Length: 446
Image (tube, rainbow, N blue to C red):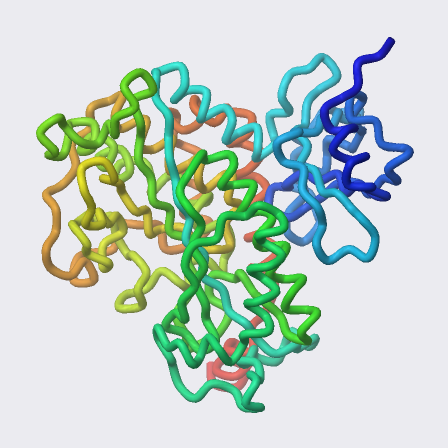
């Protein structure tokens, strides 16, 4: 007699009629299949072409084929811990995140979720456990199907758009109460652990934080959170955008990542000594971030638009100075007790693939601890007055990543080559587009 799969009982108890079988692609969007409940066999999984993992954000492929030449299928194996209801579905519908594996059971190298698992195993092998907490900024904007027209803030409950910037304004958040009430309800229904909600610096720019926890679980939550917020916004006749820099003259949107490391045997925060002071591991971790975040830049700024956010005096880093409670720095150490000592990586935009951004940040810190790298002195002044230390354009970042052997070893050389090729294909496609600025100022003036 066949042993029932743990998911079968859950699906039956919730009277599920359809199952959304999801995988995060290279951009962090949901790909997969929708299957009737009576056709879904969790123990068997599903099949999907391996090439799905090599898609660019435009739906194309890099020139070089990084999947098998026969364009084969891969197996999708459900993660039972990821099953959730789809709160906006008309009929009882489940969504389940699946892992991508070859038919011999080996993890698919191009799967972003597998990449994060690979990095977490390195921590586990070293007797360590990483803890992260993401902060996500995004804009609400009016529906505008014409890509040539700039975006504008939406109309709130008063029938007006925001006047100027309303940083930390409670009333400005209340303009969109109907939206945020549904966001909180739907996130609660999915077990997404939302923490605080604030109005950020930009016009109709919001920030929602997630509780700290296991990096894989948090990456899953970010993946599902973005999908949820977009759905709520569309149902309220507006868009939610996670572009890093969606509007000219407005601040960009980040996904700051707070991170710490726990000693699995003792349960103590590895970043603090017994006397409560910062440990050598804490300094080495920061040293690793300073050394390796620049070549890992394509994971934190994955698109041409991402680099528009990283400019002086805009609450975004231009270098990797670090300091205590210093938001001008790329690496901030918030005030906390010894048990909560952590580093905030302020480099990632909210346009990142959460699995890859979290994996890259943890990988850079791990390399720092392995190599016992020493950081610079903490900065007490403004890091905006310091020189640029980061790649200024996507093509420069791709070049740096392609020549970083330590990151290739941790991520897998095949994955790094494929990811760099995907980003290069996206950059070349963008470079072919002539912008309105060029036509306005160069058409008749040069």
